[in-house]
Length: 315
Image (cartoon, one colour):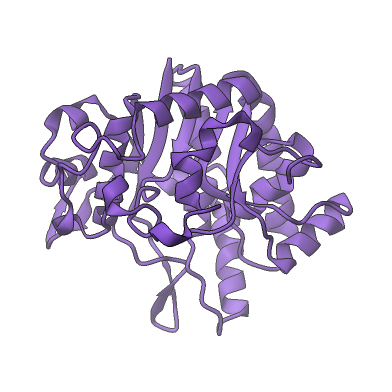
């Protein structure tokens, strides 16, 4: 049994000099349009959400209640497996990772930190739950913001962060051109089953994490940096990957002098595991600048086996 994993979670930022940091400032309703794109994939969806009620439009309610008040397709919501969590308890490295993140944000208090590190690095714990509690056989993480119109034009099913702008008819199957469709859902599962571990990213890595990785593992090809948009691990692959992931987290928490997310950890582990990689060179959603873009990859290139990259070959 296969599934898509995602999350809509209201994080608590760190307050620095009276202002929030370690956050993008995005509330859960920003991800509603992207979540509904999963309907087109025609795969079961496991959605991790806040255990406690969240605030929306001046009221407290569960994430599920918020979604029911916004998405008209009630059958889609009924089919979602909601898993309520408290991040502080669910993420197995939360205490030490959050403490270190706060230390870094205070040490470099003139820098802007837009990511909440624990919510980015909890994703393998989601896989662990899906495989060992829910007993799925193959799972793929898809970020709930992936179908945003900044990446995919509206004509291809691009979605708005502002849920009040969403056209609920601009999704597959009503929109036959929508990128998120059953063909893509099947391909993501197929790649994960074929290769065991699948990640995505672009062809450049920032110097600081690259230098740190090289100090630990020796020289390597710096022409790839992972992102957390898509990641798939088959159940057999995940059993060996999960331990390595947690070991890598410890290495970064204890030794890296900066904020890190899943980007740095996956880039580090790629040297060990040589994941199958989905790679693009830009994020343009413009018709005249599609070549090599993320939208080009998910609309076209992902279906060509020759476009799946590996270390020391295509990368």
